Image (cartoon, rainbow, N blue to C red):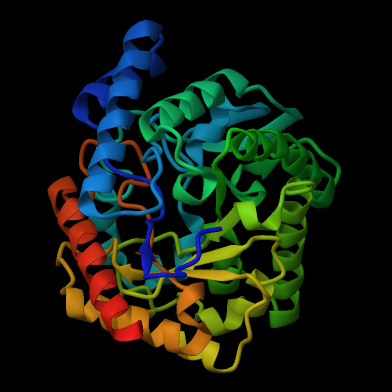
Length: 382
């Protein structure tokens, strides 16, 4: 895992806007009309470009932008067997937030998050035995990333994969535990392949956080459900070194009131039981910037790195480098400068869409500000 041993290093959460040429190919492919060769070329070209841009902006630990994926979790419908789409699925998990601000969210969901998607992302339902069938596309993803990053080591490049709890609903297995075990075992193949290819694995899991934000029942029941999700992640990580894994968690909604987001203080003890060497979380937007206070009383497990968001995916304002530096220094003073790598709150295009909420040109400006903020924090910490 990357540590900031000589300076504050930088990374981000993963998803970046796909170029129109690749989105067109994805749409044709989903309609069964695409040319596999043209898609492969558009994908390789896009990954090469996005890696070059990350490095030029000053990002130390880069990825492929998740460019081949229809969405950060929707892609798994092409990687696992045993699932069927359920078109017309709703965002019921956000019901408390939506019911409090119905007028806002009616407009928001029309144009944001899933608006302008190149490929629909229906809810998935498990209707048969789960098995991993995505080895071909995974090999193509990893090959494109390796070609783009050259001989970069695992500390310098990461690849993302969804958490077991984000795959879909169970309509086949006799219990939720049996279902999660089956999904975890299948996803282990993807996780292990990423690490074997020489990259750090990032597991994307906003679903665990949602249990605390929107789960029903008592706190004890929420904790029990969360622990079941954690057990599934840890099962899927069997045999994978902890230092090769980073866990990203967020809150599912990008720009919005977000009054129902659970504070990091409610989650942190659970998150730290996951066998991951780094923890990525929101800490830049106005709803969560105070969360650094959590580490005034929480001690990190040995070797654990924090990847706090110091730029936000929920505003088109480009953060000032001094503000970014302030955010970095707060964490460094609490957990040690070597245990902080500056990151973003979340991905900037979690779905393959023609209309990302944050304009791509602004994203690159944010990354440049992130790198400059890290330099200014370094001057204060070293």
